[in-house]
Amino acid sequence: MVDVGQITKLAEKEIKRSVSLDVLSKLEIKYLGRNGEINKLLSAIKNIPDEQKKTYGQRVNKLKASMYRYIETRKKELQNKKSGVFFDKTLPGKTYPKGSLHIVSFAIEEITKVFEKIGFIRVSYPEVDWEYGAFESLNMPVNHPARDDVETSFIDMPAHPKLGKMVLTPHTSNGQNREMKRVGKPPIRMINISKCYRPNWDATHTPMFHQFEGLCVDKDISIVNLKGTLDYFAEKYFGVGTKTRLRPHHFQFTEPSFEVDISCNNCGGTGIIKANRCKVCKSGWLELGGTGMVHPNVLREGGIDPSASSGWAFGFGIERVIMMKYGLDDIRNYYSGDIRFLEQF
Ligand code: PHE
Image 1 (spheres, helix red, strand yellow):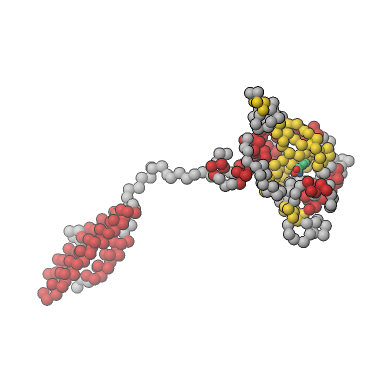
Image 2 (cartoon, rainbow, N blue to C red):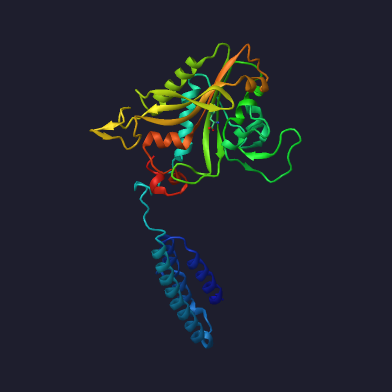
């Protein structure tokens, strides 16, 4: 005898699991169609003993009713899910917002390329270093007042017997001694890009910032080479026609030392726009950073004979050159995470 209960269970399972409206309509035919299971059950009634015919008929009719219910419910579910609906492969896909490099990362790429073109090697030295790297190796002995020129954050841990305390590097100049020792002997052409730390927070300073440090050491290197390299960088990074000038300054690790200015592109280096003072530079020039000829003591400390070789170095702020290039007025925006600011670049 046909087991109505078993067919009910099987049908319910199949209908609930149907994955598309297509599959569901096939099941509808299979169970409720003219030659479907329900009709087969109904026509089998002739073989049922008379006294059981009534209950049997009731059960099959009940099954038929639930079958309609199962199918209706599943149909609605599938329609809501939109599965089984015609899928148009030719429709354009969803577009998601595109990411891009952060302006600082982008500037690092650009600056690296400019210097790699003229044979400089990009390196990245520790941003947590011993006092030796940040000061002593740069002609700033222990207790020298020049150490106070750069406010430094010390790491809270025991000092090294020879190398001193650990510091968050206040400049990328700690790379000079490391690079001289790494390369061993001239020629050296380094571009060291790293994070630096100084406890300042205003429109032109963030406590963490980036510097790029150039170092060139070889036979007969002079200020002429330095000026030529600075002019090359200024034209490549800020645009054709940008000029540089050197102003006397003091650093312990260079002699002579200078500050570098570049001509302002907003006013063409004149300091005046339509008879008014240029708001970007006020004087026609913008201050880029420090430079100079590497001090003989620094060369010696790096294992290089100052009587045979000479060199120059510079250290410029990445956040600062971006500011100068795009005429931005608040570098805190770089790190605000505000996408409206960042996506402009
Ligand atoms: N280290 C100096 C600074 O941070 C910049 C500098 C680098 C000056 C190399 C001269 C030579 O201000």
